[in-house]
Structures are given as structure tokens and as C-alpha cells.
Length: 261
Image (tube, rainbow, N blue to C red; front, side):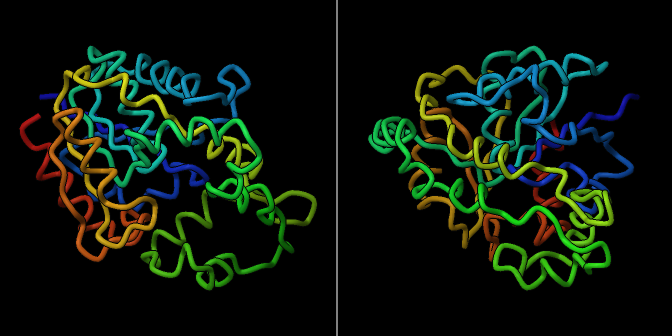
């Protein structure tokens, strides 16, 4: 019997290799795949509402021999949702992990702000565009990033995965593989059109948010889930990066949710 196929769709700025420890939790009952980095292929330029990146995901899934269960974290959860609405024939189901889902009045406000420079102040784009890109070759990246707020609660194995997959050695320096320019541009184009997909999701779907997430107030997850008849649940003590903070707990929750798909 063919194992179900899980397609991991990464968060913005975190190559798929960052989730190696998390994905290992699905062995041996699932096969897992992932596109390493969205937003870096000139065939799929970044623009408003991420549609070209959705197309990049769809084209990747079409190359597989089976329908997928998309497990999408943050940015990855949103483009997986849109892809599932547009191409349900490619999906067995969808799990969204702390996705930045904007609906209601705030989506209209944000749609306007996206067209102004203020989006860099409202979103993480401002920090992303000035992110350090290079370090001396002998820098201990695990030690360096463990001191940063975003990474302070990472499982040590996941931080190691990020340090291993997110950097290359070049010209006696260590460089980010995920371009800060790309990362900032993705943040600037957060979809504000999700309401148009109301009642268009035809595959099983779940949404897990972190108890301590700082991405949005919890009401945004609840409103989005009601629009799309998606079951919603909370990861205790989880921040926005909970799949990389609690890989075993997150995988266990996901496996329970998808066991009958």
C-alpha cells in the first residue's frame, strides 16, 4: 500500500531543510517532500496576494505521483490554502500552522497599506530587508542565532537544521541562501483577498495556532476558520515558530488530525 504523501511548505525565510527534524517524525508511515525555497525562481515572481508563488506550489505538486497532504507553516499555510481552493484535485488535505490569514475590515485596510511604504513598518518586511546576510567563515551560527529573539525557543536540533540548510560558504564567508530581499518582498505582498475563497475549500483542512503566537490576535484565526469551515486548535505554549520549537508535539498533533485522510 502506498504511503500518504506529505508536502511541507516552509515559512517565509526558512528553507525546507529547517524542518528536517520535524519531518523525521512522520517516518515510517508517510512519505515527505518539500520545495526548498519559494520566491527565488524568476518564473514565479512575487506580486500582490502571492498568486505566482501559489502557482509555483501547484506546479511542484503536479510533478508528484499522488495527491498530497500539504502541511504549511505561516506563509506556507496560506499559499497551500489558496492552492487547495484552486486545485482540490491535487490534495488529500491541508494543515495550516499559524498562518497569517487576514479577512474582514483589516484586510481592506491592509490592502491599502500594501501600496504604501508603511507596509515595511506594519509587517516584518522592514526588518527582513536590513537582515544581515554574511558572516565570517568560522562563525558558530547555532550560537549566534540562539541569542536572537526569534530563535530563543527553538529546539536545538531545529536550530541546527536551520544553520545547516540556510547558509552556504562562499568567498571565505558564510551567506544566507534565502535572500532577505525576497523575504521582505513576500511580507509586503501578504494576501488580502482570502475572503474570495469562502466556501471554495473542498478538501479536509485543519488550522493549528500557537498559544503564544505574536503574528495576529487569535480572532483572525477564528474568523478565517469560520469562513471556510476549518477546524481550529491551539498548540499549548507555542509561539509563531512552534513547529521548530516543539517538533515532536507538532508532528504528533498533525498525525492525529490526518490519520483518516
